[in-house]
Amino acid sequence: MKKYNFNAGPSILPREVIENTAKQILDFNGSGLSLMEISHRAKDFQPVVDESVALFKELLDIPEGYSVIFLGGGASLQFMQIPANFLIKKAAYLNSGIWAKKAMKEAKHFGEVIEVASSADANYTFYPKGFESKVPADVDYLHICTNNTIYGTEIRNDLDVKVPLIADMSSDIMSRPVDVSKYKAIYAGAQKNISMAGVTVIIVKDDELGKAPRELPTMVGYRTHVDKGSMFNTPPVVPIYSMMENLRWLKKNGGLEAADKRARERAETLYTEIDRNKLFKGTVEHDSRSLMNICFVMNDEYAELEKPFLDLATERGMVGVKGHRSVGGFRASCYNAMTMEGVNALVQAMKDFEAKY
Image (cartoon, rainbow, N blue to C red; front, top):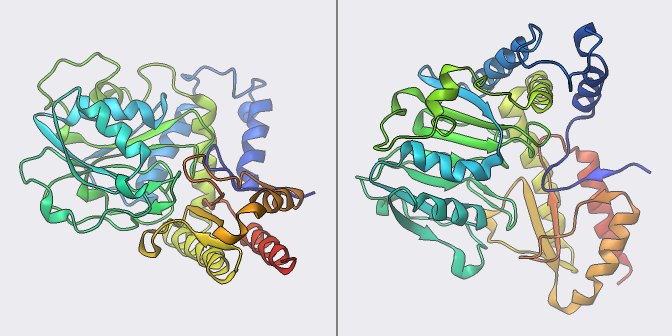
């Protein structure tokens, strides 16, 4: 049976990316060694890092004066590392979900933190709006999380504020064009849209480094990794290779504008069925709906049908559609590699299930 991977992360990757990575795991560039066992300083691996950086800069149209680095530790480590490097006196944070809240908590270790807006009281069922004018002009940055995997909310444009932005884009990076010049830093765990788990991508504005009024441990300072080209210590070799293959695939398939178009097509198809089908309802406000993580539940009068529908979806090859425990119901994560075939299969399952009732 064909499987359709709707997991929220680690998540679906293009089949050719998986196959090409698997080939190199068996024999890297004809060296007779596995990609898993080569030295990160092997002559054939530096080009992998270089090409990955170049593809990031090309696809995101990153302007001069920015560096792209690859680290371990996941985006959660960046909740600490971002303020350690960039928080001088105070920072503004937008509380749009669990991950944004966790980032805000870590920032308080380094200075004053101002919560400019929050949707917590509504269980994060909308992305906060109309807060831009409330951002103090004297903060070092405004931190946002652009997509919330648990609740299924997203902001899909670059905010217009008078202070530099810093964004956690873990679950929607490389799914749309971004005006990188508005950001002091962008960071993302790779295991949603760009690679297997194990590598974190950080885009930093070079002239903002070294301004924090504190002495940083060597590994914490971004300058360390910029100066060493992500090679200060052993980087996550296999995930970086997988990322390079995925960026090649993304470029071959039209880049970020095409990715954005495909994301909108997938989401529109699924949301249309959710809104039409008498059994289901969406969980977030329409203008906050994520294109990456589509959350929905049974209508109240059909609540007892949740498990039977999940069983049907599973029988038809759907993987990972059970909703997060904070929301319940269902979550269909439609990252870059998800096909319309997969979305249509889920929609058909919803239609067939409705026909029974």
